[in-house]
Structures are given as structure tokens and as C-alpha cells.
Image (cartoon, rainbow, N blue to C red; front, side):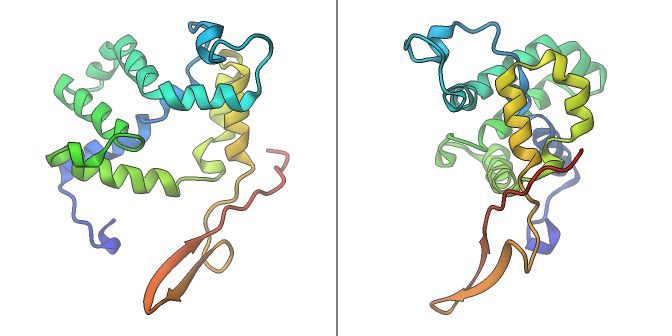
Length: 185
């Protein structure tokens, strides 16, 4: 981050790190507690997996709040204070859908960074196979599909799927998503 010209205090780095680690936990929370009608928009029958993934994307901030509420004691036992937990949730929510203009201070500053970091976070490291193997029995099929999607997306690499170009006198970085065949891992 310093190389990009962003200076963070030690506390901001701590809060941003926790938000990075926790903002997508709701993506792997089971859908078993949700009504099928909610997930399928009231349509009958088996739905396209993309619809289920989109449902999870829409509500995953609510799911992370539910996760934090369920594991609040564990988080405070780690030394994370209640106000910091609330702030971490808000920073995490800012990575998507929240109008950043409505935020102020730390939430806005770190939420903006969170949004950039999340957009650039693709590839197998985002969904480590070891964690998947440990959690697969607890995850619903759609979360498994979402995990697999990351395992087949290539990491960003300069001179491969990331390049520096000049456009109308402005230097920009261009990103191209690349899907690769998954290996044995």
C-alpha cells in the first residue's frame, strides 16, 4: 500500500486487515436457514446456480453480521473490541454496494481501499483448497461452486493478464480476467 502512496497508521492497517479477512465470510455460510422462495425470487422448481450465487452476493453482508453475532465471544476472546468489530463490519460492507459518499472518516477511507483490494482479489489464493477441504462438508453446493470459480481464475501477473498502457496521454493499468484449467489441487 505504501508503494501506491497510501499511508496507513498501525491501527488502520489492523482494521483493514481484519476487514479483508472477514468481509466475505458470509459467502460460505449455508443457505439452509433461508426459504427457497427468498432465494428463487418466488419462482418454482430448480433454479440456475447463478441465481443462488447472486442471492448470496446480495445478502452476504447480512450473513457476515449473523456470523459475527454467533461468534462474538470468540472474536472478543481474541482481543478484538466490540467497537472494532462494528467498525470492521462497516469497512467490509463498503467493499460493495454502499455509497461511499455516505461514509465518513475511517469507514470511508478504509472502505474505499477495501473496494479496490476486493476488485483485484481473484485467483486460487482467494479460495485456498486446504480450507475448502476442511469446510466442504459444512458448505452448501452453491458455496462450493463459488469456491471452485476462484480456483480456476488466474492470478494477476504483469505482462500476462495485466499490462501498463497509455491512453490519451494517461498511463493506466489494464486487467484481463483469465480462466485456467484447474490442476489436481
